[in-house]
Image (cartoon, rainbow, N blue to C red; front, top):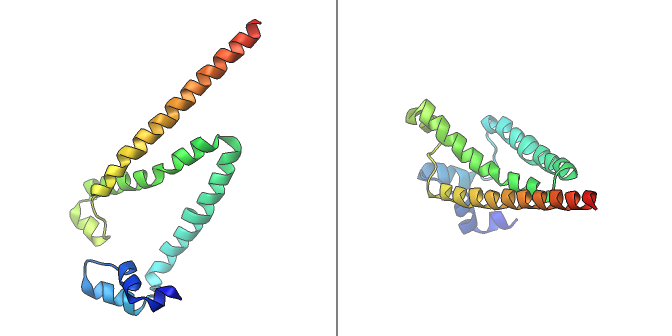
Length: 140
């Protein structure tokens, strides 16, 4: 596998603030600690399989642009929830669970909100156009 053959790639993927943690990752790159089995299963089942199933289901009942528009809210919601949990539970609790306050990457939320605003405003204009067209057709 390429991942095993290129140490630079392994070091990049196993990046951590603490050198000991990074080295443990590099040394046991295919080891999955027992404490991570349930979080990994949750991620696979809910954030992959169920999420893709629900997107497919949603595309049957809503415009694809609306489904994909709301899909981009997931990282925004995760960051907002993380900030809320840290604000409520405190910094020591966040350190215990290795949570960090949202940083500069949270500025991407501006693009998400602006994109959704454009999407929703276009849908509103489209609905108004359809309503006007139906009114004109029914009057004729």
